[in-house]
Amino acid sequence: MSKWVEGRVVGKRRWTERLHSLQVDAPGVTFVAGQFGRLALPAPPGSVEDMIGRPYSFVNPPGAGPHEFYFITLPDGPLTPRLAALEPGERVWLLPRANGFFSVSEVPPADVLWCLATGTGIGPFLSILRTDLPWQKFRRVVLVHAVRHPEELTYRNVVATIAAAHTGAFTAIPVVSRAAHPDALPGRIPDLIGDGRLEARAGLALTAGNAHAMLCGNPAMIEDTQKVLAARGMRRHRRREPGHITVETYW
Ligand SMILES: Cc1cc2nc3c(=O)[nH]c(=O)nc-3n(C[C@H](O)[C@H](O)[C@H](O)COP(=O)(O)OP(=O)(O)OC[C@H]3O[C@@H](n4cnc5c(N)ncnc54)[C@H](O)[C@@H]3O)c2cc1C
Ligand SMILES: NC(=O)c1ccc[n+]([C@@H]2O[C@H](COP(=O)([O-])OP(=O)(O)OC[C@H]3O[C@@H](n4cnc5c(N)ncnc54)[C@H](OP(=O)(O)O)[C@@H]3O)[C@@H](O)[C@H]2O)c1
Image 1 (cartoon, rainbow, N blue to C red):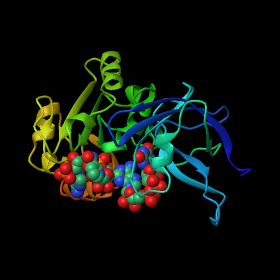
Image 2 (cartoon, rainbow, N blue to C red):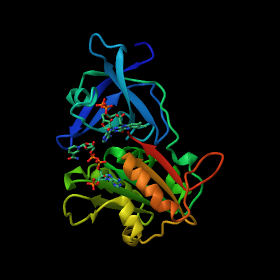
Image 3 (cartoon, rainbow, N blue to C red):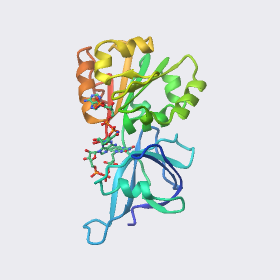
Image 4 (cartoon, protein in one colour):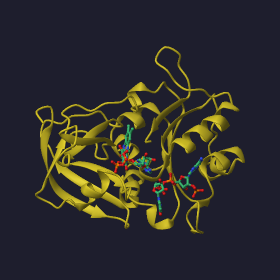
């Protein structure tokens, strides 16, 4: 258990039956906006490992405690139902160092940053967009949150705070796929890019010439979106071979 840092739950929010946020006080745990940490609980007796740990993106910006994590419960998952059942005052364990390259410092310069998320994949963008760097680096930022049902359009208060702080530079676009919703575009991200509706709503182009796209969440969305963007000459960004797409796949 020694590599783990003991944290304490200081807050929780149940957004829907399946969507939850946990606030965790864990001094000494550091990260760069966009990175993920690891949350863990003791494994059941008889398990090979001492702890069951899984990666989770930080939702809070660096330096602004407590740490916050946003997750969906998978009913048969070994960890998420237990995380959702934690109450303030209870312990949860974290790794002291965060990981990952899903950060704006890794993204090459562009005119517009497109942040494309499904479900809980909005988490790292809420951290990134509450730091200064994206606003120094890009003229415009678009955040797309795609969910199945309207009640899964969570963190709208945080998105509104970001919008208020960056008037004229920020556009938030909700997408709801399985119900009609007055504010949201219907359908899926790749289709909305393919037929131009997402760009029309943002009033901005999404091209290899002007944009960088950060994609987070459902691996099928990430795969399908990359295909649509590839047709526009956009390719994965790598340190050795700069490109236009950065991804974080959750499963
Ligand atoms: C880099 C990284 C960052 C991540 N950050 C987050 C995060 O911020 N929030 C979060 O909810 N999850 C996140 N995940 C997924 C998370 O680590 C776990 O896999 C998930 O919480 C399920 O854990 P479990 O032990 O309950 O079930 P598991 O047995 O680990 O997973 C069961 C199955 O559920 C599906 N699944 C896993 N995660 C998700 C998800 N987020 N949404 C929909 N289906 C999923 C997959 O098909 C998976 O095989 C991240 C994963 C990675 C690789
Ligand atoms: N959210 C729920 O009410 C619910 C209920 C039961 C089980 N679950 C399970 O919980 C997990 C996560 O659910 P979730 O709703 O958070 O995430 P999700 O299944 O990833 O859905 C989030 C959004 O991503 C879209 N999407 C799915 N595949 C896509 C693709 N290939 N390209 C583009 N967009 C795509 C969905 O559209 P579509 O609606 O068109 O698929 C939806 O709008 C899943 O494993 C799911 O089976 C969720």
